[in-house]
Length: 420
Image (cartoon, rainbow, N blue to C red):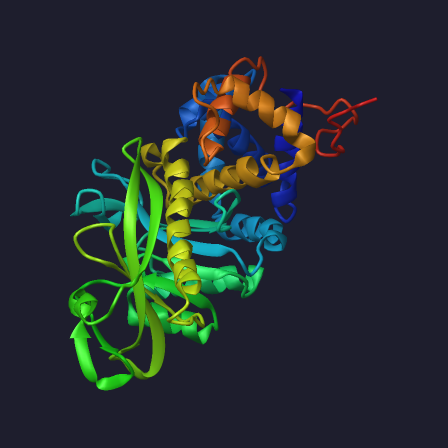
């Protein structure tokens, strides 16, 4: 338990170097409290801090400090700084626009109209955009960026412009490494133009209602939903996917053709057509150099997009493990701050302690506490969240007065998992 608190202390200190004393304390307490309570409600976080003052005083302090200043820009920048050395050119960088639904909220600041993808209906809440990197082996996932925002904010530039702005922020911190992947929300000429102008490799899943020029002929145009009738899919693959907790064996056929978008008829991309996932084929547009007759190169494009699906787990993790959609604060700053703090926790559990060999023993103990009957899942952050919760619920004190055993000040210590 003390080792975990030491790591929590060290991590919060690392990402708050540029902040003042009050905000440093806020970040430390929130990162500890959210994990200790597995919740983002301030009342539960306050209880987990176990301070020797009335609970309402702790909650008021957290609420006041969360609302006073927007920390999302600074904390995202620090996470990207830590992650930048872990991103290489073989990795997939998945950008996932989503939402935080608040259907019953009335007084939350800058509530806006959103689209609920699960129900297919308009709703109220906040937009959410997360960027996550992963390797093609699916055993290394690196959270990079996460932001909650509102279309009612006076600085909101527009849907496509916001996504491009986030892409530019991430690129400025990690460089041009990797291949960007986005679902059908990326089938937008402004977003595709943004990737192109930033000289980034990308894979975008296309919508079925757009038109395409194909086979090198700008006079030949077809609707995307019918292009499968004009292009052969001679290559085959077989994969396992997990659906509703069960594994399914899927037979796939795929092929490719050169296409151009009507908006940019002079730029030719590769379109990979994949049959087998549903009634309609999956259409993947990429600007990567691909030999249309090389099935391994074509499958790599498919694999990149399937890796984006794995990155979706990180998105679900931050919403489910800590009840992000149950956020109960009124201030827009508070909403943005809590969102980025949960993102910091995702980095902390998956990379900061999760990938360190020196911390292997501590991580194994956390897994044991998670009480998983069938081992650790592929995306192990769920088990980490459960194990950390089980570990910290037995703590008699929070983290405010925690002091390292190897130094007089809790903000000044060295990592010592194996003391003499």
